[in-house]
Image 1 (cartoon, rainbow, N blue to C red):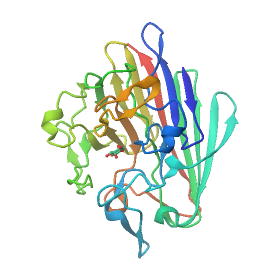
Image 2: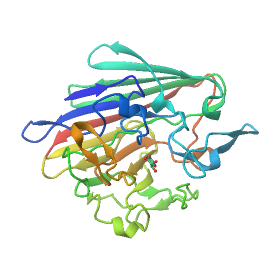
Image 3: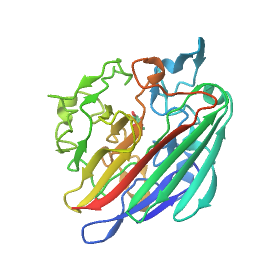
Length: 317
Ligand code: GLA
């Protein structure tokens, strides 16, 4: 495999994985140059933080104090705000083997978040065709933290992903309102289009979702409960035989099927990125956890260490 990563947003710009004939193909969306990454794009390949996903109305209470954050997604805060970790220049240090450690210190008050947060993201390409991402963070004041990687995968390397077969280790999901904020319920996937407990083509139940733009943009509650590194999802692309397994220590995964892409962004090799041309498996804590005491907590306190890992492993069938 080959991985190319930039210190701007720690963006994975290229990820080449073999098909069943051993032929390598770039399987992530992105751009050929830095410039388009500096303009508006939907978090292609980036580390997202300080808090990935949505925070209702950009407000939360912590230890009796109300904090207000940038609003950048309808009425809500999304993916760290106007200038999140995806738009920061990180320090890059090579590690032993095929690995790079990226570090960034988010100052107190950045995008409205309390306290300074020192973050490291180490990306390692292993001999087992895995891209492993290790996240560490410490804070000097209590603050919410929820880090993910926002890679857009297409295991065929082109076309749409509707026929990719997806399995997710989740018996439950978190239903959302019309602004994609969780209602607080943890619902069974049984009998719903959220049921990926047996492999299903990604696009086979889109019409049952009754959302616009159509497609998945939902958080799944992983059966592992976020206890240890566990298999969260498996995606198989029938033609190439490529299989992507996602392992994570996180309690949730946001499945996003690039519903907002509309062909107006031109990516690598001149490809127009159309709706449903990729899927994201954003391993993370649930959206708006800061406002839902029944969800696993995202609060990091001084003296504690935030530590999570996600592994994207490539095989073939
Ligand atoms: C996440 C969100 C989506 C969208 C994309 C980026 O997956 O859940 O609603 O904002 O990021 O476009």
